[in-house]
Amino acid sequence: MNEKMDLFKQVRDAESWLEWKAKSYGKNVRFVNATHGLFEPFETDIVPDGDSGAAQWGIAKKYLQEAGCPSDADYPEWAKKNSGCDQSLVFIIANKKGRGYACPCYNESDEPEGTILYHSPEWKLTACCIIHEFLHLFGAVDLYETEVQTAENSERMEKMYPKEVMHNPYFPLKEVEISPLTAWLVGLSDKEEPWFNSFLPKKI
Ligand SMILES: [Zn+2]
Image (tube, rainbow, N blue to C red; front, side, top):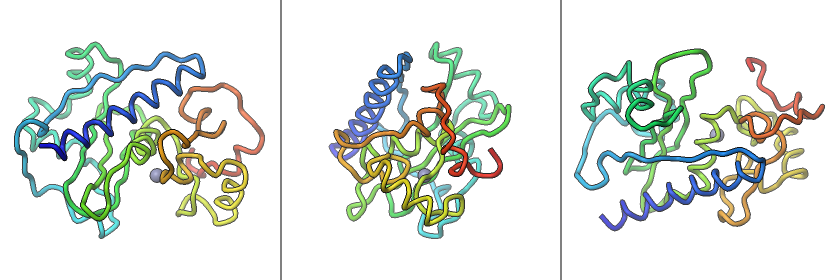
């Protein structure tokens, strides 16, 4: 229970950081939480071993089904109606080793959006990793070397914004930052700059 409460604190810290960051851009963002499995035990076998590296699309939907959510297809609307919030996301913390990922909805879709992160004694979950995945759900892209980003781009970002959370989420919460590119992608800033283009994946 102590470990779970500490993880929930990391979630709240991440959300407070995002609220504070949005405010610095003149945007009003507020997170409201409902939890499942925090105060009661919950076990499921739907979470694959994250070391395989294979993202499970629709993990949020699968989780909601397992959790006995009344209607997974209607979940976003149901969540809006019952919380007064205008957006919803499902955040799963898996108590095992693995690599987290986000499943954003790119098109108009009523599928629930979600992200999964793993927590283990060797690889403890931090607020900055939560911020990284939440920002994916709002439209941010990875800024380190991946399938979508070249090594050159990663080096450029390292020089320009070394503590950018989409480039490197392993800084303490007090030090981490977002670049003008991430701010623009997630809708905090309207200021588009010419250099953004070379970091955008082709499909955006
Ligand atoms: Zn990422």
